[in-house]
Length: 285
Image 1: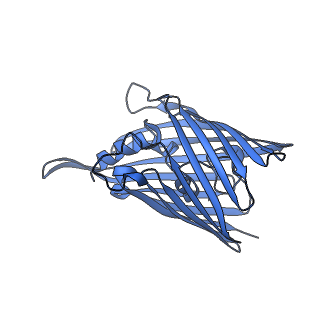
Image 2: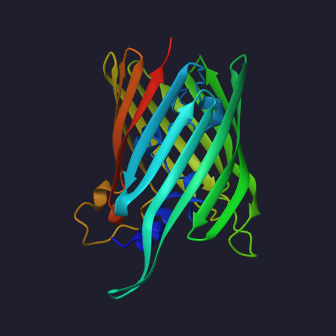
Image 3: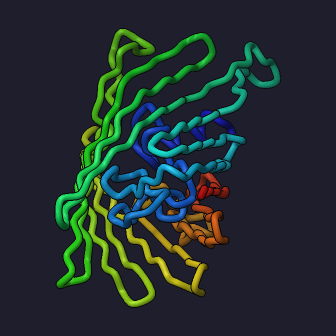
């Protein structure tokens, strides 16, 4: 499928805005959960900064392949992360005549910090974003704030976050494109061998509310299965798509092998196709 079409569909799917890297899943935790499960404290939960489990002896790498050879690379070390969304080579083409070939990338660097007061955990992430298309570029600063609280009586967690606050310091044009600011409320129920979560995400740009449901089951002692779905794609389902019922469906498997955590998973992007990949997290002594 044409890359320009993929970019437009991705824009609708994740944020309906520029700077797709801010809302596109960066690792398999995010991909398989549809960017949900944000109240779960985890080494790979970078959605709500208060839910990130920070360990100074951990580092990791993720690779996600999107349709049309678009790829997400994600590197983590202690409290830092580096994400690269590579759109590959695009063509300015009319029929069989190629006028120009150019590349496009987005880069995001972030620092995470959180602290706990009784049953409340506060989190903050700050960073910078850089985007380029051919000879044109744009950059800015971003931040997210989060709160996560656990209630033992109901064995549940409730999270809130404001994501993608910031300012574009240099825009592609004289008009400053808005960052995909969003507000999130999440609920996580801890069951005996599983988790059930719900996230509601309000986009400040579109006023559209995304609803995300995710289940995580423990298959064996060190193996977990994650299943999710959302209403992202309800406006993009077409009648002649035999697999439209899979639109928005996410699936992931997590396994812990001593000092290595492996995640593999995928998500259906409707008529755009499938996204799939793997994440590795290493825990040093």
